[in-house]
Length: 287
Image (spheres, helix red, strand yellow):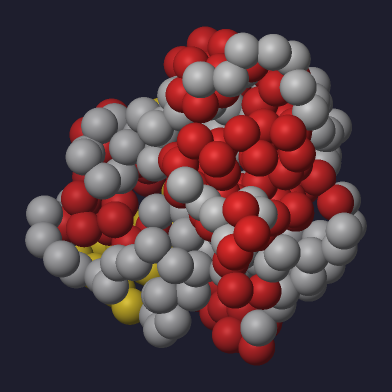
């Protein structure tokens, strides 16, 4: 199952980042705390090169706290500070701002020692679509400074946003990469909502999500959907369909409706705090 979705505006965004990097002091790389491997654009390392970087693990409120701690330790070993945040409610945002100031303290101190006027720290936020950039900007700015939405591709243009007298923010639209090589990576991105449901077979996506949850969080899945036996994903979908009244004519299961329920409840955290990846997993790993 191959997922490729690379609209023209994503090519423009890559050029936008590349052409404006010289203006910024530090980058905030936003990832989904539930899938840090799959939600990290592999192009960013080459784009950012030696730029200072802070990682924000967004949607940490929906992620497994134990696995999030493992990710923080993992990035620390690679010399990168990772901050778990919830961009909607503001959890971790103050810590993120403080880390930006720490990263840029040497240049601020240098300007002060030379008697120069200290300009605001210039920050660029980058990430894949629907990972929460606009919500984070709004929390940082304390107002609705950027368009927000629960669909990928809402942020289209570029804009500088004054956060406070110390920090200016360069916003960029979400950007995927041209070809998602690993099937499971694409599936996890689809589960998270980073790829538009309209271009997917959501029944397949929900099937694979249930399969992953049966391996990693079987108790949470059972608790939510009230099935008892160790049954196959299709049987679980059928059970949910009958339990929730997702039926077509002749009492057949409406699997599309079931898929929408399962994906929606995963994305909202209704099933529980779930992370599908830990350090050491390979890209696209389904376990």
